[in-house]
Image 1: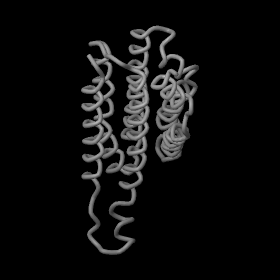
Image 2: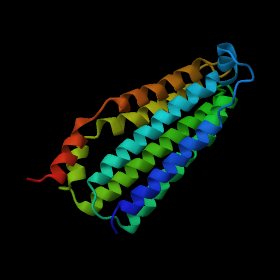
Image 3: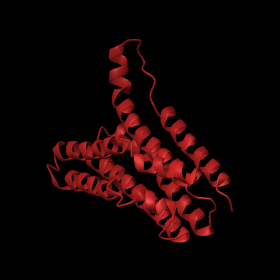
Image 4: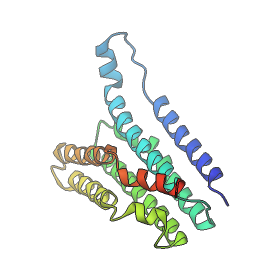
Length: 204
């Protein structure tokens, strides 16, 4: 099976995820900046963070499947597992927003990020095993430093929220900083994938 249907379905799911999140934003009752900040300020920040994560996954998914010609049943199921984890983003984001960053919603949000990272790793591994160790994707992934560091950020954030200043917000603040830091790390472009895509599409 070629990848076009899988990519189209995945793009559609990610677009719906973003749409659901933006619809969750509350419209200010007033008509000035203070009303926007008071009613929607925190929601805009959590929306921005999750939007960046959705964009990161869309970008990486897009690049990865440029190096894949055909998919198997295992790849389809691994991709669905990833989409399931990503589809929970609107729920965990809204809960974190409405709770004003209480401990449990922040921990659940971190677990959502961790599960999505694990699902993406599984998808990548299934594809590489199908294509073989000399595949273009395996060469492009290389040591996958970002992929290994990201879960450490998420775990550090989860543990900070659970263990540090449980009655206050210091641990939660550290957790959110870890989540933001991981997102910033992924925003920085990785040229290896771009080079691999160009070489794969133009072998000459």
